[in-house]
Image (cartoon, rainbow, N blue to C red):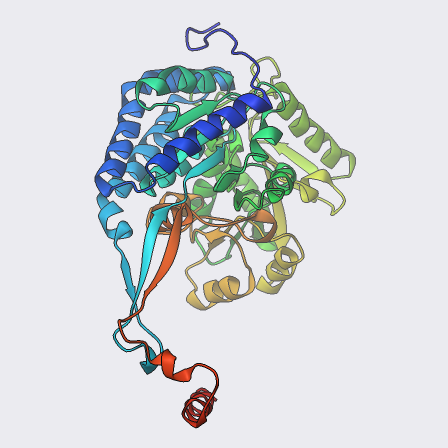
Length: 481
């Protein structure tokens, strides 16, 4: 057992969760106004917690995975989060400014309208296992920027990382400000029942529905960052070498265990064989050995078995499953699985029905753009969409006709790293947005405040309604007709 893992914690009970929430709520109510300076200090402290414990972060996440590429953890879990914190620190004063809004009706001459960003209070964050730092501390960055207190429930597959956060966080924040919780059995559903001022969830659609149902009992607003089957489409006039290189890179990243990864790719029917050949060549150059530490493992045995079952189901249904590492088979002992392509799939197959969440890439042939549009629109709205084309009219046609949470054009994944753009799903892929300003606003109450003048003309328009009031109301109705 790694030194990262402390002794097993006491099972977290519903009463313990409520006590922790009550303590945070009491602290919030005693000091609900949090200055920009205080928020900046919280963000700087959060960044310090990450940087002080960088090697322990990497070791803990690696332990949870069995093998997690060090460079992937550095990029996705450390650099991305600290970059987001720096962006929030830099922009916080601008985001926090009281906004002036216009006043309607001349009757209110001299009055003022303001929108004041204020902390919601105490928020809950439920983080998944695939990017345990990015998807817990990322939302936490927005929560702290908005001046909130937070409780963060980690995944059962992130035990080493959870215990690390539980151990080190009190050195940086009191529990009344920030509390991390390990999933010790049944914690998630009880956590969802707490009357938070906002509940933020990242995970599967099935679990998201349960979280939302539990939160509804308290009318707790929720942000759901879910998943789905995100498509890519390659215009036959786009350089195929470049498309293959970019798609295969993101597909192997974290062994494909990314909610916005390319789940399936539309390749023009005239280019299928060439696509397969180029994918094999890319794999031979960049992943010559799946047991190399640079190639991440599947998170657990159950997920590994699920992926194997998905492939077996496709083979049984007549699909062609191509192992891009011909000389290496999936290895349950190390939970390493090579990249695979799946061709000639049928609509009844598991790989067509469920999000893959692993190193399996479904290849779909198409003839015309309308084939792509019709198919994607017949499915749940995806979290992401990846068109590869230099044709501006074709791109606009796809953007007009295929709705998704976000889009990266001529690549994949990278829209998630743009701090000045909102990130979030649509329909079955989620609701709500965060990152940058949108994250700040999601975790804030954008509170409208109307300031009345000393003299209100409305006193002349009160009952009993005389001729003057009737004339004014009649004129107002006419003016707005």
